[in-house]
Length: 81
Image 1 (spheres, rainbow, N blue to C red):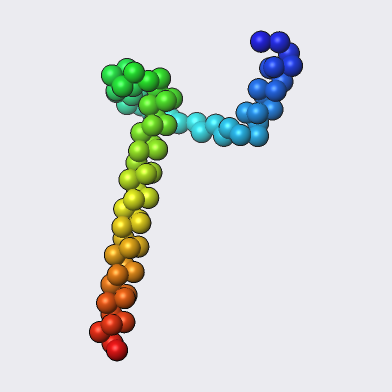
Image 2 (tube, rainbow, N blue to C red):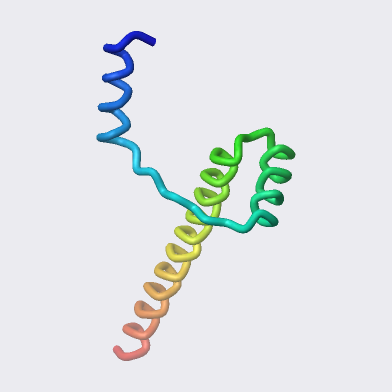
């Protein structure tokens, strides 16, 4: 990689990437290594996929709660007419 490419990469990372330090116990890190290896990913990739999966599930649950609340409000309006 030449100096121009290195500089462009550095600028890209500065504008688009946020590093998130993560402190874990050695025991937990060992588990991360095992699980990431079984999943065929790096530890970093495994953590990102795991977090994305959890956040997507939480988003879906929130959407379901909002939909349910909307339906309940509509039923209450009907009952109060």
